[in-house]
Figure (cartoon, rainbow, N blue to C red):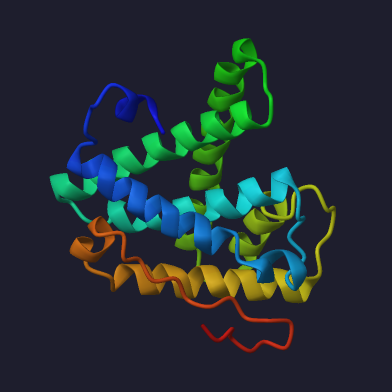
Amino acid sequence: MGIAEIFGLRATGEARAAGLLYGRIVEAARAPRFFAERGVPDNLDGRFETLALHVFLVLRRLKSDPSDAAAGLARALIETFVTDMDRSLREMGAADLGVGRRVKAMAQALYGRINAYEAALEESGDAALEAALRRNLYGTLGMPRLTDLAAVAKYVRRQHAALAAQPLSELRAGRVEFVPLPDATGQEAQR
């Protein structure tokens, strides 16, 4: 139960929509295939990076829509991310005095990923995207397998296109569709 519920406050429409959307983003970011088959480190860093990647993809889709509704949902999604990072740190036992500083660092890290992935998606070909994924998603590994980099880059491009085709009304209802991540043989996962 959050603080709003304790005091009987109701979430705004954007906050409610962002909460539903964020739940779907977390679900996609936690797909076991990223960790078991695509070599993303299955630790706090790796899980943060998959989450940041998926938040970026949805924020990019929202940014492409010039409406106030899309901008409001994007702001609420970022607020939901920050709230979740705060809650997660507290659940892991972080001292109250350090939580704010650490959440700020995580938010700055998210913005750094957004800038890196945004620039990489603007480039033709996958070299820039693979480099951004190597630095961020696989940053604690050193050098990931090239097949993993290529598969995740393909996933990011396909997911970007899939999100572009999804109406804002569906996103506001928390009904975002994520494409399957290819397995180690290059086949897409079955849902």
